[in-house]
Amino acid sequence: MEKRKNLLKKRSTVSFQIIIFGFLLLIVLGALVLMLPIASADRSVTPFKDTVFTAVSAVCVTGLVTVDTATHWSIFGQAVILLLIQIGGMGVVTIALAIISLSGKKIGLWQRSTMQESISAPQVGGIIRLTSFIIRTSAVIEGCGAALLMPVFIRDFGVGRGIWYSFFHSISAFCNAGFDLLGIRSSFSSLTSYADNVYVNIVVMVLIIVGGISFMTWDDFKVNKLRFKKFSLQSKIILITSLILITVPAIYFFFFEYGDKPVGLRILYSLFQSVTTRTAGFNTADLAGMNDSGKLIMTVLMLIGGSPGSTAGGMKTTTIAVLFLSALTVFRRRDDVESFRRRIPEEAVRNAGAVLFMYLTLFFAAACAISLIEGLPLITCMFETGSALGTVGLTLGITPQLSIASRVILMFLMFSGRVGGLTLIYAALPSRTDTEAKLPLERISIG
Image 1 (spheres, rainbow, N blue to C red):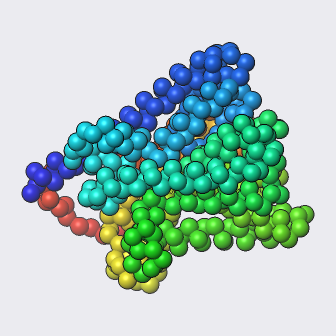
Image 2 (image 1 turned 30 degrees about the vertical axis):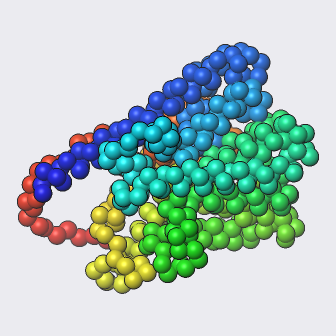
Image 3 (image 1 turned 90 degrees about the vertical axis):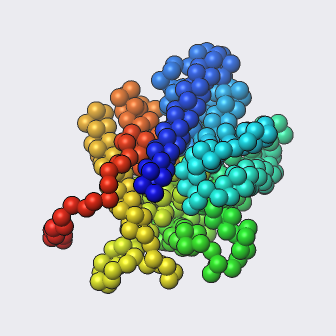
């Protein structure tokens, strides 16, 4: 039994290493392809420091850029970026497993285990069916999103460019990437030119929300329809937490930001900023003009991010929910962390605490480092590092002006936020193989 347990730990460690290597390989290949003259609009060679930053941002579905996506890159370059977004959003292992499956080759237990770790699936059983479901669902949703955006973009940019823009923004929104091609109107403008367009706002928000909710949750919808009681505990927590994290910040933004807008537009602006902050990276308002309290709330939302097993990054909704439930358990002086009449394992509580500690450490350390290097206000740097670590892509406009050192910090944060902090640690540190003997227990005071 002990040998089997150690074998599973070793296999899990190798799976984590493969996930990290897959993302790194894709980033390097993407950066090299983007250096080709055909990838830039003026047919020049883009410096490696810009291509690698763009590749990291695309693969990690972040959206932070040092050059404007619409004006700097050619159609070929934009297509490469879109491919990196698609693979990064759905997961390198997911795409690889789909290709192996289509080739007719047999998928072994090791590949299934790696896929399980990649999408945070609860078990290995049914992983091939789930992979197929992810591919098909993503294609359908992205296709529907593009079809819905076409009437507006074809009207504004013509048939050819309108169709391309529709697919690009649909995939970017569903993958929570935040890359846009609207810089032809104004560089780094994101969706500000459509800030008052209710139709575009709603389509993009729906794509962001759908992409940021776990694929396992959508599988729950497929199996159980709208019978919420039959959903898994994870799906229930994801849906409730996501709803709270969208509505509560939107209410704050409505009352304390955008006061100069009509009521209808205030609702639209507030909802969009609340939705997009959860790792999507599009914006319809001037973020630099927000209050410091509004920026801080957005930073917290960016760090939380989307849900596990989705296209989104961040600490994840389940992490913050488990920590809240754990605190509630302490306040009520109960022994077990519970939700929806189910107990949550102690391992999940420990993992949530470790993830929070790791994210906060990286977040504050990186913000302080960039502030010292660039001589910028700490709140501005915190917004940028929160955006990178949460793989969001929102910015206060400082990214293109940052030095190489600061860009390296942001790239590391984007990579950590996409593959997951625990994945990096599990891949780097060997698993313990000692016996189950326990050390003497001694209590310490907390609080």
